[in-house]
Amino acid sequence: QVQLAESGGGLVQAGGSLRLSCAASGIIFSLNTMGWYRQAPGKQRELVAQVSRDGYKIYAGPVKGRCSISRDNDKGTVDLQMNSLKPEDTAVYYCAADLLGGTRNYWGQGTQVTVSS
Image 1 (tube, helix red, strand yellow):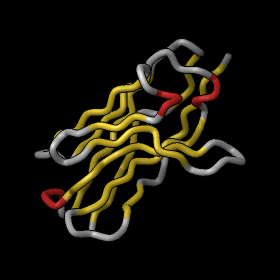
Image 2: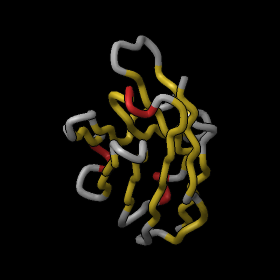
Image 3: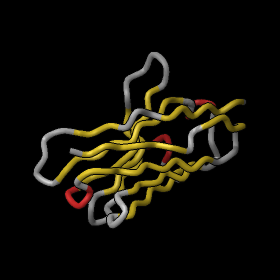
Image 4: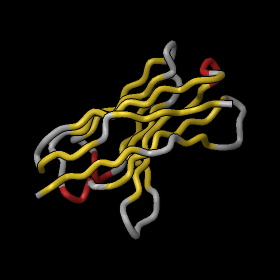
């Protein structure tokens, strides 16, 4: 089992930056892919960025060039640095992870990011 805890959300003006952090607890040595998703009101949850155990990164089109994901395998943490934020980035951001050989995603409780125009 894995538990995920996010931090770092908040209110920021357009053009500003935020850094989201996620710390895993439990069997962190078995963590496989870790990433960030977001869900805006009335919309489906969507991938923002993810990073594999060996460091391969994927970014969603709307955030490419503005976000950077990083992880620390020893600590079981994954961070998301978001720059040049736009009002359309407003959403609840969720940390997600899966385990080696596992078949499900684990989710954090979510952290609100609000970007004002």
